[in-house]
Image 1 (cartoon, rainbow, N blue to C red):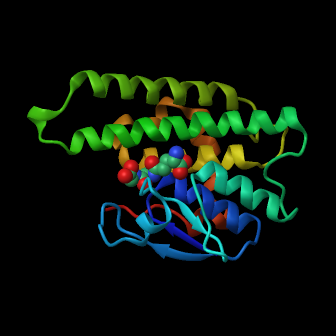
Image 2 (cartoon, rainbow, N blue to C red):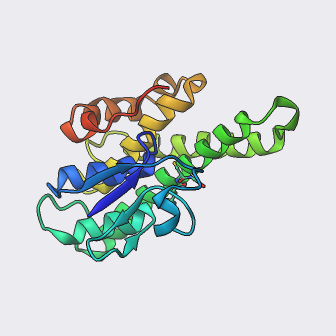
Length: 203
Ligand SMILES: N[C@@H](CCC(=O)N[C@@H](CS)C(=O)NCC(=O)O)C(=O)O
């Protein structure tokens, strides 16, 4: 199977970390977003990464579907609990982390426009999501080693990938001092080989 990805996509990183943690072999194919000849469009009508192409040429997306698929493939290092209540709890952390990523991506896109075309209202709305989301995650992780059930899980992976992206793209936020519990968690996660191997590339 082959993962179509871009190196700095936090959603694609989540999938790559899950695969490494679960010792699942996956071919990686870097794509360029917006490239009209990209194989991405052949496999995903939305043209988004990550997209996982299975051996029978069936494609899976988005990241949440892919991680669920990988989680169920092998019991090695269970990242999504079997028990329904805990599983929903993990997925809620993931939804919040991904949602903050969505807002951070939207800020990046807005800031790429010529200044006269940027919408202050859009930026304000997306920044509020980033600030509120990080504040909620920072509060929820306080005094805990891992996000859910005292065990490393997909929730920690999603939060770690979000923080890596915020660190890369929203430098002006100074998030490490604003959200000390998240900063501590990020330091711990960043030491894992899966996070080291997939670290974003400053550009
Ligand atoms: N909800 C999706 C989000 C994926 C996403 O937005 N990926 C971005 C890159 S970080 C993308 O492919 N953007 C290209 C586009 O929107 O056309 C997921 O979890 O996979």
